[in-house]
Length: 157
Image 1: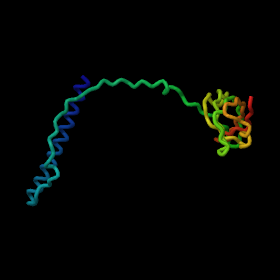
Image 2: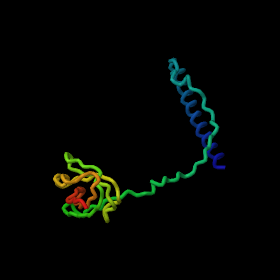
Image 3: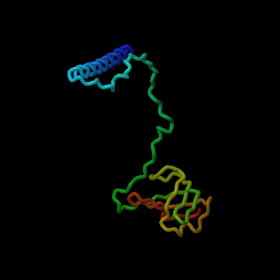
Image 4: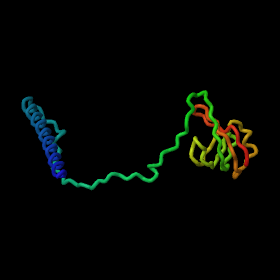
């Protein structure tokens, strides 16, 4: 029933549109006849509209992928930009960048801060990286001030 109703509406709209176009063309013809000027050729190659055969494909509501239901972890932000918070973590060194002053860690869940993941952290002091090697198991402290997160302490276990 719904398909029949939608088809009727579509046909009605197309009919109104074609009638409107014909009316405009008739007005152009009358104006041209009155002024003895040629009719505009812009609509001469128009093919008449016919009602298309509707093709209906069953639609079902999309099912979210399993990853769509996973909410990203949001780091808690201190109440003010001057407030500093510290979080303890444990992980394994995956990368060391002395020039950029950062370390890549495969870390466990950091309680009240973030889930376990592999990520890069800037270190507060580049010299903290001097005694580290890839594969070292470490304990570290993240210092959070405003939207800035840095490792303020890192030690081999």
